[in-house]
Structures are given as structure tokens and as C-alpha cells.
Image 1 (tube, helix red, strand yellow):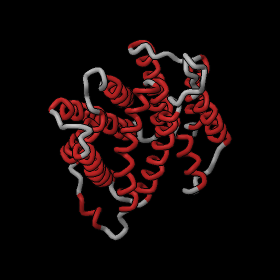
Image 2 (image 1 turned 90 degrees about the vertical axis):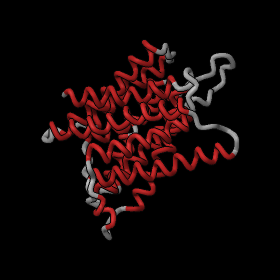
Image 3 (image 1 turned 120 degrees about the vertical axis):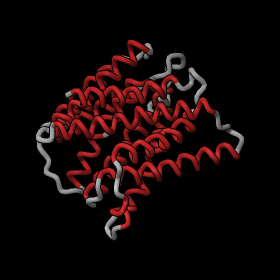
Length: 284
């Protein structure tokens, strides 16, 4: 179980680093780009992937390219969500994306649906609606802070579906990870180069160091999650449920106690519903 705990801590640490970015004058876009330098290098060092499988006729390059584009874009959306909506709602929205992944598994990949999983999907959508709802404190009008958690929810769901597509192709995990991170690195730095040419940012050592730390936490999340599945190979649902519920719970604690994030009663109810939805959706 210690691998699960470490994976949960690394996942929430990613959100914490994104939350602290503005306080320490870190450009999130650059940090995300440098993050992929760290994850690409660490993947090569830790997993020693054989890249010959990437040249095979059946290699899912469409999925790799899709993930290479989506990963940095959704990382940027997560950064914006943490900044505008907070860690609690952003982490819960990220983990609730599993309800769309499960729905896709039933509709696109031929997996069987159980009553508990269907109930979890329905409850998850209600939880999402409760979490993203917020009204502006001064005007009383409906705010726009809900957009970023919704983007995180939709984006991570799309990433999960593409991961499923890549996994079905049979390409070894380490080689797939290396390809995704390498493509994401190119896309992320292309975005930052365009910003630099437009005079909207400049490259600094501070941003590079912050990005490398972000990449270390991001990679740690992946490595410990994979190790947890290896250690509990006969209990994958336990790993999946513990990981998602743990991130929601720890994210809620860190967001409210450390960063003093203010949630409405409906938002808090949504977080509770999210935990219940994850528990239901990961049954069996």
C-alpha cells in the first residue's frame, strides 16, 4: 500500500506546485514544458525502454500523436483550474474523469457494464455539476470558474480513452510512455517558443528549475502507481479506487487547510458525491 500512498502524494504535489507557481513568479507554461524534459529523461533512465516496437506496423501512432498534443494542453488547463478554482475542485474533477472513461469502455471497447458502475457514472456527473457551480460573491451572477474544472474533466477523460487505445495496440508500456512524453515535449516547447516570439514570455532558470521539480512529481506519480499495480497485481480495482479516492481526499485536505480555499456547501457536497461515485464506479 505504500506505493499507493506515494502515488497519491505525488499527484497532489503536482497540484500544489501549480498552485504555488504564481506566488513564486513561475510561468506555468514554461514549467509544463520543462516538466516533459524531466519525465522523458526519467522514463529513459528508470524503464530503459526498447523503442523497436514503435517502428512496428501496428504501432498506434495516431494515439501517440493525440496524447502528445493533449498532455501539455490539459496540463496547462489543470494549472489554470488550480489557480482559478482551487486544488480541491481541480483534483476532484480530474479524478471524476474516470466516469467518462468507463462509459467509453462500455460503448467503444466492449466491456460489460454493472449496475454499480452505471450508478457511479450517474452519480459522478451529478458530483461534477455540484463541484463546478459557483456564483460570484459580489455580483451574485454565475461565475466562469467552472470552465477550468470542466476542461480538466473532459481533457483527462479524453487522455484516458487514448491511453486505452494505445494499450490495446500491445505496444510495451515503457516505449509508449517514452513516445508520448517526447511528443508532448515538442508540442509544449513549440507553444512556449510561439509565446516567446510574440513577446509574451522569456525563458528563465527559475522556470526551468520549477518545471524540472514538477516533472519529478509527475513522474513519481506514474512510477509509484505502476509499482502499486505490480505489487497488487491480483487486486487492480483496489489500487484504482484507493488512488482516486486518496487524491480527492488529500487534495481536499490540502486545499482547505493549507491554502484556505473557500467552497460553497454545494461544492463540498459535490466533493463528497465524487468520492462516492469513484467508490461505486471502481467496484468489481
